[in-house]
Image 1: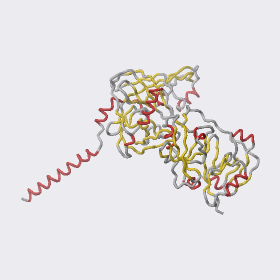
Image 2 (image 1 turned 30 degrees about the horizontal axis):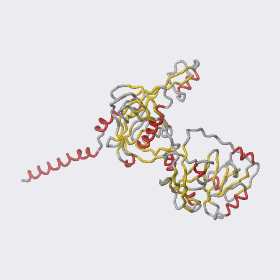
Image 3 (image 1 turned 30 degrees about the vertical axis):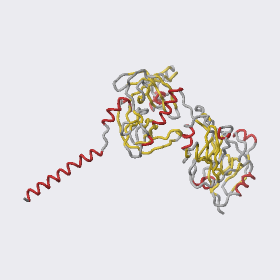
Image 4 (image 1 turned 90 degrees about the vertical axis):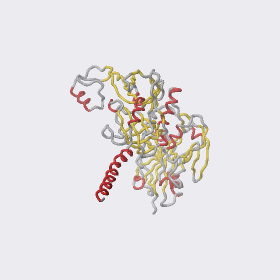
Length: 469
């Protein structure tokens, strides 16, 4: 009897531990079905660019970039040949969004391309036509002449949760239909100089050649376009960024309809609100976008918006951070009449505005600085200031303000430097040292004061805490 009980217990124990690996296996994601069903809609894109009058040297491989370390070797030790046109090639990825051959990819994949070739998973190749590209969102729409093609299913990136699994398919380093997986690391990431795209951050391995490929959720729906990586080595380091598919499709629809993308603009320069700036303006929190400059004659100027205003809502949409405003404004149709909720001098108010249209990319000018021989010292801030001459105002393209001759103590810690121009103290414009000192008298000791500072072509507020002595 004892032997029988022992045998039953042993069988139960073995059965219990045999089940555990199966339970673990069920918890791990299986990507095979997703790849089988969706992989055919992912394409390889190869482009050819022609570099006119390229400098070449004997023995140098064709298409070598000037940033390549070996380019310097050939330049130094090989006699140059006569400049000639030279072809360079690059690889990327894309995915089919309609059965009649419309394909989405990154704008940088097809930028300056003389020829674009699309290769499908069944090895068929097609010459593609670029319908349009939008560099601001890094989205391009291309077209091949084919029908009955497999296409992706669009998902909703707003439903993505941080921590859920995602899959990327593309052609890293030219290896077609490579599959990598990871999780959503963060949502709504805004990168430097990328104010119009709230990126999806993942740790799925993305490498050169993955650009333009799709990011799938576990339902097999495309939720983003793989666009950028953070890297110090040139390869994957665990930080990948994808354009949300709803943003990309909005761009694609405009490109398909007109070949270009129109965005709204209001003509302001904004900055993030720090706790010190919030205190200086009497705000209870750091929500909103602080206006540091208003373009003369622009939509905001016509609506009566002023520097030092804080935009809390735009067209009914909350502006929780300064990075929210460019995206919300850009998505607003030019010519629309909207209501803007502001914080001004301790009160909330609404103003109406007609949204303008954003022009094409333009190069920024670099401002020059003038200097005076002497200045008045403002010890409470650690500043030496001088009034601008008529010549300096013309050169700096300002109507007033005070030139910073020296910045020490609190001013230096706040980031002020020689050559900056102080345009206002809080909401009060200053054109003379007398006005500046009078404005300072209104600020209690130990409180933060906001100075509107022009540096080059940019303006921004700087918060400085007044000496309590």
